[in-house]
Length: 179
Image (cartoon, rainbow, N blue to C red; front, top):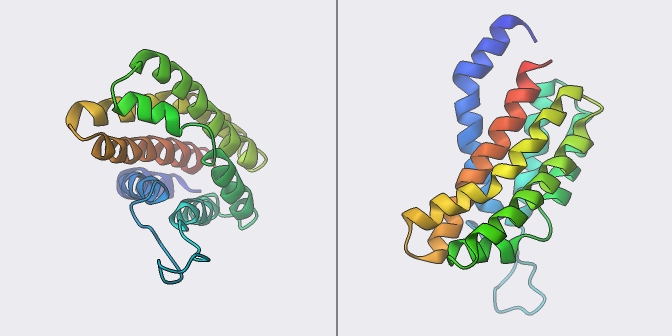
């Protein structure tokens, strides 16, 4: 990437990517309940919104890194990282019960999430390891959400926007500026 392309990425595209990341993380969390059949059908496949996030993330990683090989790796890193073990922790934070305890645990869970992403694309960019500590910021999005919204469901949504912005902003700052 030339210096001019890096500057354009930083000034123009990075804020757009951060906003996109916020929205994609909220979509992953349920903003769009994408269904491919009638909701009355017991065989209905619901919840495909969670797959939109890693698909867009992988494609954007490929575009920024200028490598098609990174797409499946980034997709898998995001898919696995986002998949397990943090719903109860977020619930405790937004419901304002044991906030400190759940925040500490959620920081660890956020580091696990960012570690999956970093491990998946490490081969393509060794500097990506610097994004791992950003996972520790995961609870702050939900704490801010719980301070700005009286409804726990709305606070949870705000937290998803905030952490999505942090996660995508960190990843693409490192990926885009260290090529």
